[in-house]
Every structure is written in structure tokens, then in C-alpha cells.
Image (cartoon, rainbow, N blue to C red; front, side, top):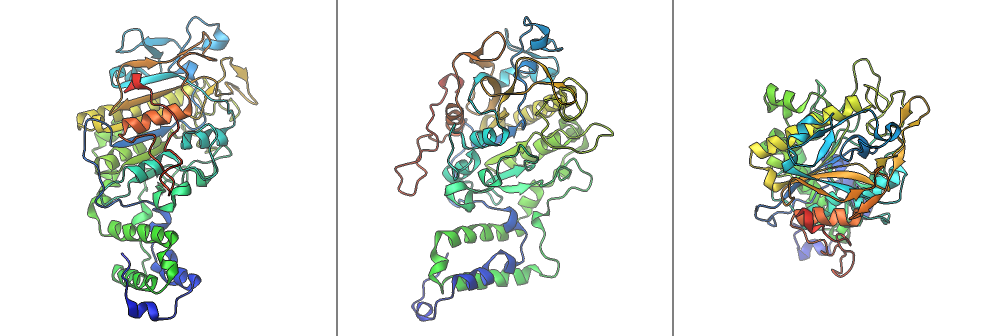
Length: 468
């Protein structure tokens, strides 16, 4: 993109600070580059096939109880099994919690892993591990989404990687673990939508502000500033660095988006019919999943969604950590409030089932991997929290759901013991889980991410062939 001109080279080099001030984000007057950190990948897209080329990764932030969802133990003592009964699914011999009837009817479309395991019970560190797909991630390890957009870039005129609903609260992983590209660079970070709990498509006044420009700076002036910044980069060796190459990438894509009618349409969930919006559920998770479907349909490669299911009537906001059900937030795990299973699990059942059905109806399920998982599970024994009863953190054995392209439906992989406390067979590490996701997305887990092309594989794990 940079022009080489001997006459320009002979001129006095512009300093690093001058180039940043003149050609940087602030001087361009854009809000998009502040949100958008993605490689445009022009001309390097891959051909569609029966395997997944896109992914919707749903984070049950806080850690879902495996005993009250995917891995119930109806014969265990009450203090372990809890109050809910198990129900049949469309797959013979596979039963799930009665709070998930819609997903029960769709069991032939997904697989459940009952033997996820690691040893970290601290939220922020466990989330960092899940994001990187590594039991011992380095500080600058890129997240799954950044790796996908690096190794499987999109040719669409919208960001290849979008994050819906920012992590919040004391349990959140550091921003750099998922809102940057790690050692890959900022060009592979996601576009973030939803920085606060009420900034989501379920809110009446929601709109994607990333398309806004400074009202005092018309688009024509922004274009002139962009052209000037390109010319200035040719005057400085600094403009030839990887840092400025990344800056160039997301500023260039910002202009693409400002001119892209397709991108604005993709982010406009109001274009969906009221009946379909009702089908997903008029709550943050339901509407974010509907938006995620619109985005993958428009060519987005990876959409991360934090499974914040909203507030019950009359509740005040506390945290988006829906699934951290200790009973410490004045709502018991079996109580009907924002932090309780009777509130959160049916809403998730409705939203995820609607997503799977909608993708299937549109012919997109074969090419879209859907992942539903938290950073860990919950303790087998129900206990008294600070205010209400709950279950505490438990990483030794928990469950995950995967569906869509490349995944065998109607499969239950792995087995827990009689209390869903420890893995009995086929343990699945974060490395193997992530390697399986890469393989489903037609990405070789052994692909090298280092500049030298020899070290740092995308994942050191082994794919679970029984799921593929």
C-alpha cells in the first residue's frame, strides 16, 4: 500500500511521534479504529465446504453447573443431584436437565463433552486459559478468535472477528487476553460491540456506534486525511514497521466499513422480523445470538458471545457473571433471578436452540461451528454461600456443547464418575478441545504462528476424532 519514491526518500524523515500525531487514529477522526482491530485478508479467503468456515463461540461466563445441565446424576443423594429431574433427548440414552427442553429435542444436531478438565479454579486465569486454549498460556498468547482470523482470513467487507458483550466484573480476564491479537498483533483483535451490560441488541435504543464519525468532520475530509497519512508514511522508516502496518490495516478497513452498506445492514438486528426476535428471546443473550447469526451470514469468520441473560423484573444490575452461581449475589442457584438456574438456563435453552434451528433453516449449520462452554463447572455438593445456597468453582470435571460443521451430532463424549466430580473416561484438556475446534474449522492445529514459521503451533493438542 505504501508507494516508494526516490524523491520522497531523500526528504528529511518524519519522526515517529509526528507520524502518529498526523496519521493516527485521533487525527483521522474515526471511532471505528478504536473498536476495530482485524485483518482484512483480501484475496485469501477459502472456498466453502461441508466443514465449518465460521464459528459462534458462546461463553457461559462464571461456569455452568454440569450437574444441573448436561451431566445429571439422578441416582445421587439430593445434596449432589439438586432439585431438577432429567428428561429424554432425541438421542436414545442421552438425558439432560428439564430446564432445557428445546435443546433436548435438537440433540442430533450437537455433541456434548462430559469430560472437560483442568486444575484452575480462579475465574480470570481459567478464562485466559480457555481463550488461549492452553493450560499454561503465556502473557502474549493470542486467543482462539485471533488465531482463526490469522490462519483463515475473510474476504468479506466486514470485520472477520467480532466480540459481543465485554467481560465485566472481578472475574473477568485481562483485556489483552481477548481484545488484542496477542503476539500476532492488533490487526487480529476483534471488533468489540457491547462495552456495558445495557449495550446490547435487547435494549430499545441500541445501535452500533462503530459506524459513527465525528459530526464536525465530513466523510470527504476523513478521506483526505487518510490519503495524507498514506503519503506521510512513505516519508518515514517508521511507516514501514509492523506496528504501522497494523495501523494501516484497521484504518483501511475502517474506511471500507464507512462506505459499506452491507456491513451496516449486517449489524442492524432491527431488520429481523419481530417473530424471529421473539423466537430467540428478547434478552441480551437471545438478541446477541441473533446478531451473531446475521454476522456469520454476512461473512464474519468468528463471533464471540458472552452469555449474559439479563435481569429479572425489578432487579438492579450487579454483574454479567450469570453462571457464577455461588449464592453470593443474593440469588440462590435454584432461585428465579438473574444469577439462578430457573431464570438463566431456560433463556439459554431458547436462544441456543433458536440459533441452531435458524442456522439449519438457512443452510448455514454445516458451515458454522457453534460452541457453548464456560471456564469450568461447579462443585458436586451444594453448599451455603454468603447469602444463598449455590455450587462453588470446580474445574476437575465439567461439560461443553459443540455443534455444526464438522461435528458429529447426537454424540456424548467422555464420562464422569457417579458425582460428576472427576473424569472417568476420555479426559479432554483445553489443548485437545481447541485442537478439535480448529480441525472442525479446517485449520491445522499444527500451523505455526511464529514469524520464523517453525515454532508456536496454533494448538499443541490433538483433535478428538470421535467428534469429527
